[in-house]
Image (tube, rainbow, N blue to C red; front, side, top):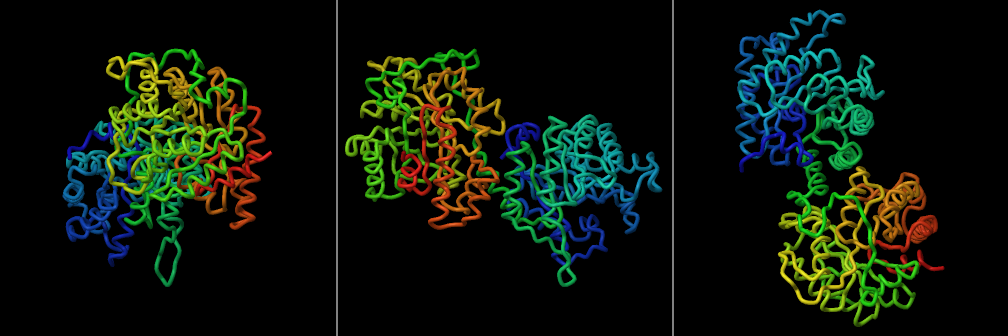
Length: 614
């Protein structure tokens, strides 16, 4: 595999770095009085084993074992004359393991003694120390440099400026903060971000000293001060002395939870670990990153001749009411009630059809049928839609995602739905395969949801994607999804505008728990003059709330809601509390929406009906 240039990879999604070198060497019996960098020459196989463990765990950046390979530190071990050889060997060992799979980052730490005016090292000596260290790594052809674990802002700025005099390769510059959120010298995260960005860092960030929570808090402050990519390599919590051994007790699962929060809340670009982290931690982080982003990113919206997707929005709502009961009800001003029922994962339809009958008897207007939610393998939503319509007599809304079909297959399904008398479609990009039952399955993503809307609207106008006439146009009522709590809210609204411009006629939101977010969303979409279905999800337990918040992309459940669920735990009381929370959200949103979309967990249709009962 030929690696793309590092800067191209940086722009394409989150990159996972490796974890602690010293922690693994310590676990292998190498005590802290040894020169770890000297092991590049004395025990190269040991260093290679550590690199290989991190590569197998999923790291895309392998750091060289050269953190302290500068003259001031090496002199204590009598190795100063081997400085160039130690650094070159460190790069060779990392490169031999990384191959074309990962990038090799030259690790550069502080000089090892305090700089003037706080210590004995003159700035001119420090500059020469950094110049010698960086030059050795660059000469050995590292892909990037990582300046890390600095607590003195002036020292890392000196290191960064010196490195920039030598090379133009990417440089990650990281400092360490204390539990108070500042460096030991009182420098704030905002000052760190601003100074390092101005000094020429490609990526700025934090590593070492504190665990993931404090790192996240400081990163949030850095994000306000810079638009540069951010990096985090926190410790696995704070060290504890147990039976004479220094141990870090933060679990891989907990690190992954905070990795998710960092990625979602500050737009993190590089995530890895420092002291106490192991390949298990990196493996958990890698799995989380795979869940959040497809291995193959959805392509830009397929360009067709229908519309200029970036032109000003001129919304229209002109469906063929005679063919879609849903469209007709929206047009007449009826508050439409919809319940989601997922297709079964096997052949037994009894419970699924029973749930649909309950909905019909309760006067529910339509049923949403998701398409392989969370990349799970289920019965075709198209087949289930026909059963709901013909056997139950309820109007289905079929979800179609871009993950599993190429443009030929998607067009075929759209034509088939229309022929079978199924006229409501909700078009989504789809969850990546890494999230679901078959993580190694191939994702197609010929287009994203915007491209799929364009394709469907083309069919509604009487021609296929290639411009060939199809005879009588389809009459597909197009719905799309939106997330009122999207982290990049402006981008979410811009994409929604493009969907409406491309032909979408109504909007279904992600579950809403925060009224302020929904009101902001409504104000932003009001100019589109497009019906909105508010998403409502009745929680079933505290664990269900935590799982949805931490592990399901696009879900955000406020802390106060999770606290309410935690107080009741699980069981009947928890289910009742979940329904109560959902009813409160629906009551608050009813006046701002044209319909409701209830998504009961575990296909618990009765919970949805309890939310909707008058």
